[in-house]
Image (cartoon, rainbow over all chains, first blue to last red; front, side, top):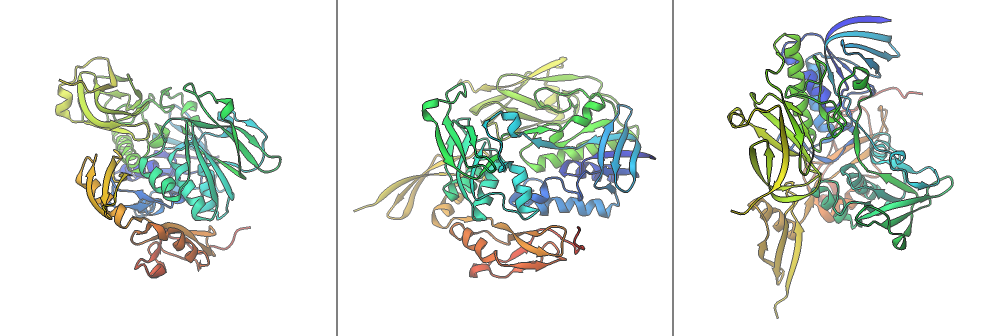
Length: 417
Length: 128
């Protein structure tokens, strides 16, 4: 077995991992290694061939490949080592990493700090428990995207999409552009799960029906999908049998949510937040294990890559400070708890002393609200589940915050004076 | 006789997603309501007069790690020309290596936009 000592290991070479590695190297850390399972760097971005990336970070409207190759080039320029085709099998709380690839065989890396950037995975049919047969032609949206836009295959000709997450909406448009017919996008909620700009550009532009408060109740077909049954649901998401109808199709695409990928975090006994399903992190993006940091979709699922990059930079900077002995533990810990209409908040632990950016996911849409952080209050015109709420707290703002061990973060209706 | 019509357009400039109520009389916009900001007015006006969209797709590539190359248009194209642009590119095959920014097709459909590669793809020997 190859044994090596390194400064910082970054697990995952997507948007978060690349940003973290670049920042750490720029802060003067010599020995930064990116461990990537795929045969190239970039994570999910190379297959996201549409535009809309970088509007915030670069103030430019880029495609996924254009966005991520700016970072890949930087990694190359800074001569950061990346091990591709490399699968990390285990990490320990004393920052030992066991990985394997076909060049080194088994690898044991002893790092001073680790940045977790493994991203997230799509929920599958198994997670939904849809009744019916098990034919070919049932794919997650991201798999369909990879097949179509990286591997050059056409996954189907007559398509139903279950769930209206962003990747599902993007794929509805791609299927139509490549000559398929998209029969419907079926969404159980009374509103689309994806960004409104994607509902307009991907569905309305191509007259694709969006069936709200509907779900797929059964899949038909022996070798290949032949049809799906869809039904309207009641207020408790229970299908109403009388409304069932069959839609003929050869492909069912699932766009029903993303789950942070934390198998490795668990091998290091890192404490996870049941709301985000990612590690609990403090304002330095440090997990419950000192010297192990997390960033991007492994911490919680973002809607914009620009925010993922920023989180990666913060984690990379913190990891570098840790290695340089410049990252003291927080002097005070305020735990942020999700309150009314807040599903999750990251970071979960702040000091209340240093400026911090909070990322919130709300449960349901609301207008004219106040975002409450303990005794602090910030007005918002509108909050919606697909769009992460970003709250910047300056040092000055934090002076006003009552320093309790626990602070509730909640969304409240604006009260008329 | 005056022809009057009210249409609802969802603004896609920012996440707020205002639903603008637009009054059109004799083919001219006479009133735009329910918008939060001037950027929305610009979008809604363009959306009604000459809607455009970003355009991107893939073309075939020989001799690279993957069989398709992602490409985009240098400027947005008219919304009703998107499927026409896709068809126009369907028969194109390029040879690796390709660099991001390389022009794949010039002045597509006479729209005054070029189609460029959005990533590098090196030449590789085909793997078995």
